[in-house]
Image (tube, rainbow, N blue to C red; front, top):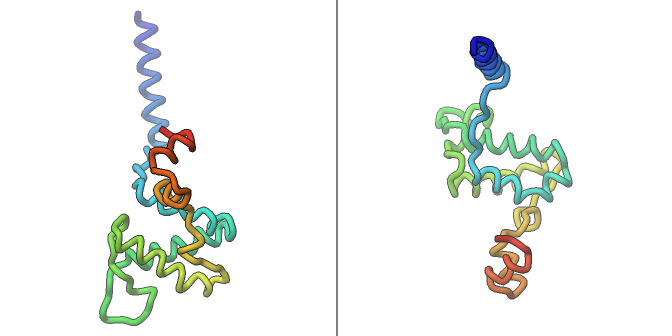
Length: 136
């Protein structure tokens, strides 16, 4: 019994030490993950440069507004991530400024279809499309 107690204490100490080395990951916003997933063609075409462009657009879109300067590094749009205005701004920023980084971005052709859009294009109802795709 005493040996089991020592092992339990050792295990607790190791778990505590592990948590110090590998802190728990913050929960990801599913809307943000879906935004990036739908832009897979853009990321596959340009790789890390596309990720960097999306990060730059995110930084600008979320940086607070500063009416006292015209320097884009010191001002932003002041949008909250995950809102419709934020996602709209991300597409607009990528469309306008990706070319400055040597990239091409077209929000109409660089997005994967949603299941609802695919079912509409296929002429099937959403339920028929899900069944044909083998989704639950």
